[in-house]
Image 1 (cartoon, rainbow, N blue to C red):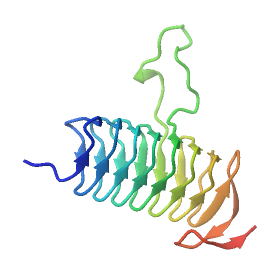
Image 2 (cartoon, helix red, strand yellow; image 1 turned 45 degrees about the horizontal axis):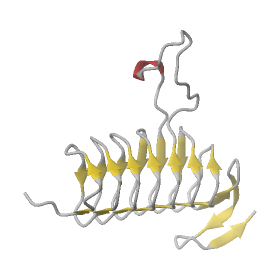
Image 3 (cartoon, rainbow, N blue to C red; image 1 turned 90 degrees about the horizontal axis):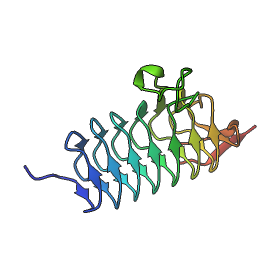
Image 4 (cartoon, helix red, strand yellow; image 1 turned 90 degrees about the vertical axis):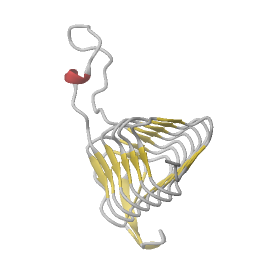
Length: 174
């Protein structure tokens, strides 16, 4: 069966990933097992998508993003270059006994990015956060708490600075 998406020759895509029609996966991107990418998506150069991540339809994920398991991205989401989605609020390589940690030594924090949201370049999203529909996260932000629908947030930590419309234009500043 012929694939109905484009993958650059250097992309590393698991045979256990599901890629929607007309999606494009560019140079050196790594798509792990259990990943689901919807239709008409663009996955930029050097993007890492960890196992079992879900990405909706019509998403644009720019170069050099890291999306770790526990992340769910809904339809129409824009993710700027160098964005990182983390999944561990207390990262350690070893457990209290000095042994290398295993999957049993921690629990995955979840991240949800709702329909139409945009996340600016170089932002970091911490675990156990939901970014609301059509919310706009400014470049360089560190998202530590839930972001309401249509909220404009930025900074470290990201704070609500106003609200935007579906086109991303400010409609109200705090």
